[in-house]
Image 1 (cartoon, rainbow over the protein chains, first blue to last red):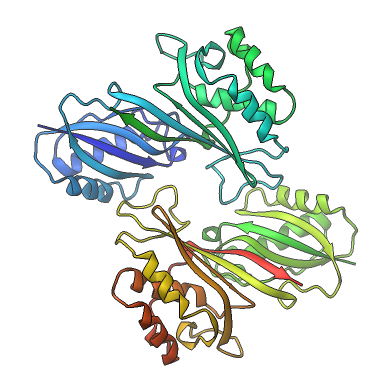
Image 2: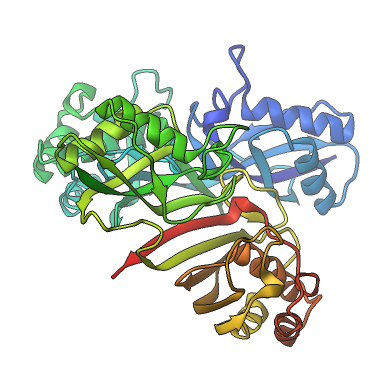
Length: 246
Length: 246
């Protein structure tokens, strides 16, 4: 048996999410079917993060086991050939130790959230970024973000359906940068709560619009109440960019 | 009467091209219908460049005339509202002098050609860049591009259906740069021949693959024969990024 690690890119808009569901195509199902066509085996694919519908990935990691032996290049190229009709690509495939687990071995995850801040609607970026037609002050958003870096109880930024054992997470990195009409928010942590990044972005946008002061983010965090923070930003702007392992 | 200048973004993959045709939706037709819904007037829209099907724009310029008076913000926002179902957006609208002509007053045009050079197929960039799975040497492509800068007879890079009076054009700028797996080719000239940028890119790719030496580009140019240069690069990777006026 060989355990395989994949790095994946996908367009979240084409799927109901990472996880296999009855209501539409999932990334997991697309991969499991491609693996079956490659090998004849029915492998279960485990992802590092269960991205929601609409959330994109440029660096999702997954693992699965195969009895048959393959070259790494063959696994990557053959899966891509079988995935030709799907909005998912295998960026790399490599054999790993049998105790490697895409989700439980992960020591860090990185997300990018993209906002396009301009009055005209999005065309080339439609479905790939959050359209914000009202001018946003990215420097104020960056000042608000400072209050969220480090180890905190993130209950205010946690979806009600979140299944994590604890609302305490450590945000190692949270940066807001503007390049022209593009505002990018990068977040890194060992792990995230459900909707944590999207709830942070929805809150920082209130700061960017001037509805909130940067300090209000600290008060929202301290409240430990989802109603104290801002709305959930849309899935379209979110990208799982990297999963790291020791 | 007011003459209006528009700056436009569009997804070329959604249209048969800039120009109104019988075989499918054109950018020109989408704009003319939106203008009619805004004003009740039947204006003809003139574009700076007649982009082919699949060619994108982030800075196409067009003009048209309206008898009724409007605020500039109204023209931009109302056209965008009427274009909501179309893959085109008005980035700006401004009244201009009555002798302004989007095409004939233009003194410069800039194009960007995007190649993604990686083995896995494109997902998030599908239809937005040329997928080149074989490793390309961008430095060699840049060396090849040098031979094309300046004033030359570009017959070797001209489509047979090109309607320009002369094959002599001056390429003010032609740069090849790599950032990671992305190779970008930027070209600037007063005007271009039909397919000139795509034929240049198709030729430079031969250099990038090592099939041609950089000097072979000079020989292809000197031949003044379309058959001496490389194939036409696909439309998907090409963007009309800017049109300049004095």
